[in-house]
Image (cartoon, rainbow, N blue to C red):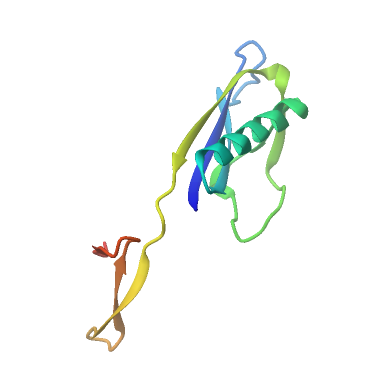
Length: 126
């Protein structure tokens, strides 16, 4: 299973861009797929959705997203007539490291954890 992020970037037409509105907007999706063909199908489906609804639903301030809850607060719809073009940036996500018990205790008596990647290589904590 492979994990990817796709960032769909919409570029705003300068003639229709409101004052203080960004020159580009984006929405980000994460996908779990078994192969590249599945990923391509999902990306195409997302692009078709953007064209079907005739615009992009974006987060006004992406730094305020609360991943613990799903909501539509802080989102706006940008209609297609304001967008000149859309492109997607796709990146493969690295798997999370596994926590491994070392059997060692620190000065406070807490267990010291180590991290390993999927290949079993140790990763030093930062």
